[in-house]
Length: 234
Image (cartoon, rainbow, N blue to C red; front, top):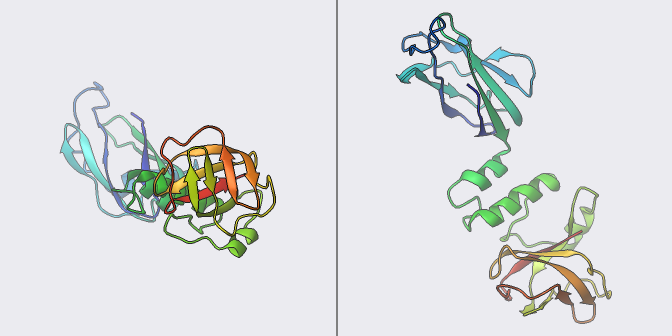
């Protein structure tokens, strides 16, 4: 039996593995196999097999399923983690897991997301943290122009981030530090990352540098306000 499930990197976790059934009839539940640490084998991203680092022996729970603990050494490599057990008297059992970076896992599965403002800003945090080398984007972090400028690499899609100055049905006025060059952001995507209108994105069809007003393709479903945060993506 095999399935793929997410695990949090560098984190201990409790697993249920199985079912273990008799190797002769392929059906009878094996409830007293006496599994130990050395029976539980792991392979990280198809690498060399090794027994799990966590020393606790798996114990039977019910119906041939066993409780198995992994520690932060077992989950220290992001990517595919394959676990298997082949104990004499039982058919082999295999499970596949996907070890996710901590911020990505937390954004997807932690209660309320890492920012406490719901899953969308948490996902933005996690994704941009990976893109710009660990400096997480957050609705609660004030972007600095010089920092952004130093991060303009092909791997970084952020052109600008800031706080909305004003908005209308089909426009948005960027912050005072935005470019003064006409059409500087024309053709790029603006994404509202926090505050009123969070989660919306529109393409910029026109930009006037003197007023910082960007015209978007269509109207906002929920009009942002001066507390909303945005990023412009290349």
